[in-house]
Amino acid sequence: MKKKIIYSLIALALIAAILFAYMQMSGNTTDKEKAKESLEDFLEQTYPDMDYEIKRKVGYGWTDGTYSFKVENKDTIGVETTYTFYVSALEPYEVYSDTIHESKIDKNASEKLNADAERHILTLLQKKVPQVDSVVTNVEVYNKVAEEWTPQLKTPKPILIMLEIEKGDLTKEQRLQQSQEIQKQLNRESIDYYLAEVGYSSVIDGEETFEYVSFTPEQKLTIKDVD
Image (tube, rainbow, N blue to C red; front, side):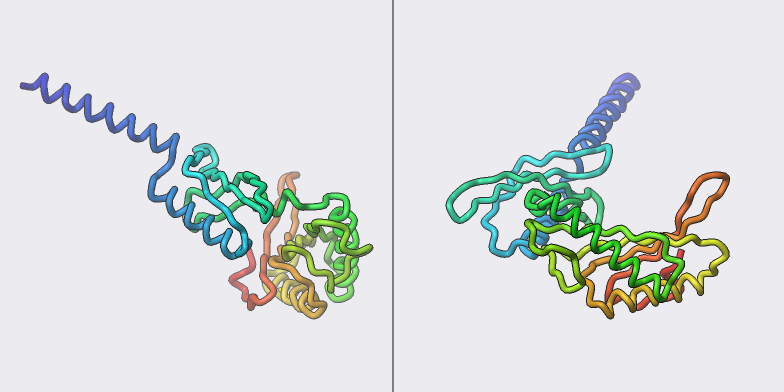
């Protein structure tokens, strides 16, 4: 009797180990379905007129916790193109990359417009916040829509703006005031951005570290938003 109990426990342990290994390698069924729903919402909002199908076979990257979905798009003349989308396996199941958008980007035109945007925004912000050291943007266009970037230029997607300021002895209150002024200047120019991120740099034990203040155009910044 004791041997039967021991064998049963061993069998249960093996089954549990196999199930655990399977979950690690293929992901959780519930999370997979929620990730798919998140991708469907993203596609319907971003490409409302697109004729697409999400394939049933789903990949799982257990090392980075992502599901990979194959999305087949059929254009107006019947040509089918397949795109791979990666979605987080954890709530809120964020879509990490828009491969349809990425496939259309004109890299040369975007590089030129990025350089223009970074110069313009740096000059603009240093008038009110001279401590701004650098600006990096991610202007992405599908073709050469303009000779140079201006705040009025509309891109397929709003841009990300990343700034760097030396932290030094700045207090949280001072960093909040700077970030509020930066937001004010960006909004006054009607720059089409979805997020601005101010990185306050400092060197600790020979290593550069950053503390961030991030905000959207509509966000009301408070001291809680300052690292």
